[in-house]
Image 1 (cartoon, one colour):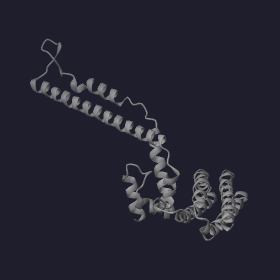
Image 2 (cartoon, helix red, strand yellow):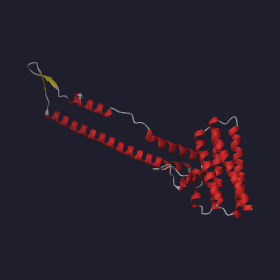
Image 3 (tube, one colour):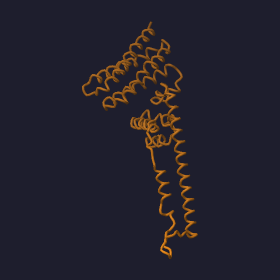
Image 4 (tube, one colour):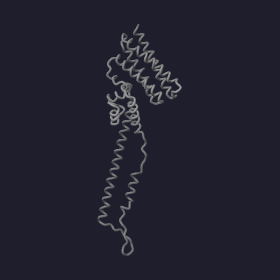
Length: 269
């Protein structure tokens, strides 16, 4: 799928935060669409929380119609100098039609209000459901590597997770340089969980005789990640708000590296 098709699909989706596999695969490899998707999700989640200003439009409309000169009968002078109202049959009919039209307009307005209320309630329900069910680590990682869901062996999962964590490291570096501290925070937390909770768990399940060839490259990758994140965190041109999140990446990479080294030693012995 190209960028235009992906963005059209997300705009039409009932739940943009949960794209299908094909769209998720494109988002994984396209930083521009991924950033666009994240902004779309934030906007959709924020819309139901926007305050609705009070309006007196309906009251004003009713007052204007009821006290409009169009509803008043014409006043003509009588022969004796007094004034009296003259309402012809066609005028009564016209007034009746106007009242009917106004009644239909008022009913339509009430219907629109009811529909708006229902939509608001549905949005609130969706928002409550979203808050009640946070996105799992597996779902977040699947955005970066869709094949993880179909991986069958610990070895295959370790290989895919190594690629995911490396992409997360690259994204953290980009966000740090761009000064996007809020987005960097989410990426750093995801990196930390991906390394500590998932990568290490899958590495422990790899048979001892297979660890040397599989885990040694991952150890080098984590060593590079710690060095890069530490260097960026201490760089003068790195915003202060981003440094804390870079230290999270460095800490996770360091601990992951040390634990994988321990597993390698177990495999040798």
